[in-house]
Amino acid sequence: MARTITGNHHITLSVGDGQEDWDFHTQVLGLRPIKKTMLYDGEAPVWHLYYSNGSLDAGSIITTFPMRQHGKMGRRGSNQIKEIGLSIDESSIDYWANRFDELGIACEHVEEFGTKRLKFAHPCGLPYTLVGTTGDPRGGWGERGVPAEHGIKGAYAPIISVIDPFEMTLYLEHGMGMSKVDEEDGRQAWELPGDGLARRVELVHEPDVRPGTWHFAEGTPHHWAWNVPDEPTQFSVKTWLEGLGFTDVTEQKDRGYFKSIYNRTPGGALFEYAWTPEDRGFLVDEPEDKLATTIQIPPVFKDRAEEMIAFLDPIEDRV
Ligand SMILES: [Fe+2]
Image (cartoon, rainbow, N blue to C red):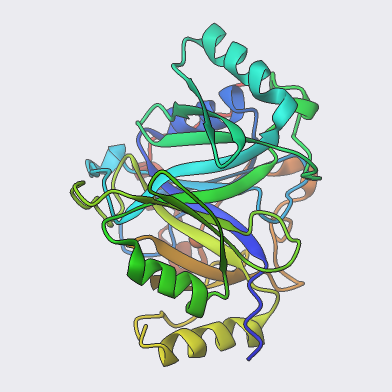
């Protein structure tokens, strides 16, 4: 059974205002804007914004659906991704604390699982955690106020709130092939085998916290995508999970830049398993020096392009 899941592919979040999200990710966090497109699902036009580290590395992509224009507010809670864990060099923790102080953004120093961390929030309230790491070769972007050596490298781990960890640990171990690598204070850390990056999941046991919302709604994480190397592996993962009883793995969905399947885990977090064919990726519709400069209309909505662009609040790249 070739179910090699290698690490993070991308992270997708439901945020508030689109311009606010764009400014936060590009100007505050110093991430690189790489795509301005729309949600492929449903009927209403929703922006889908993509950001990355300096070199579009696997596992460095954050994507967002701005939901404020649609009036859909979410509730954060248990059985949901609780914090977005991102990797920075451990020597950069103080740089970021000073930067947040200067920008008037509240942050908190913590130490968890032996790593120094900085917790703060997206303007829509979504909790983020910068985790100090060593030896992460992914490079920062370095072109918007944050020097490349201090830049965000990419995903570290989804930090997931679970009412009861048992069923989720079964999924991580038997469904994904992870092993428990650490435990402390009601928290567990699990990792995929191998030496790839962002192979980790952290669970926080919160039995008394009301479950959070799962639909597209402001202020909530939507899913965490894992990378699989190719289509046979993706289908193998689907077959394996279905064989364990997780029969709600979706059919393959073509997301333009990659191909995806999704599965709601028993810990509540939605996981995606994605692979990027050689003829896809983020350079398929824009050259590298023009990324995110034009609006990319999803193929399913090509005949409604004008209507959809007119509906959406414009987003400017304000340097
Ligand atoms: Fe996704």
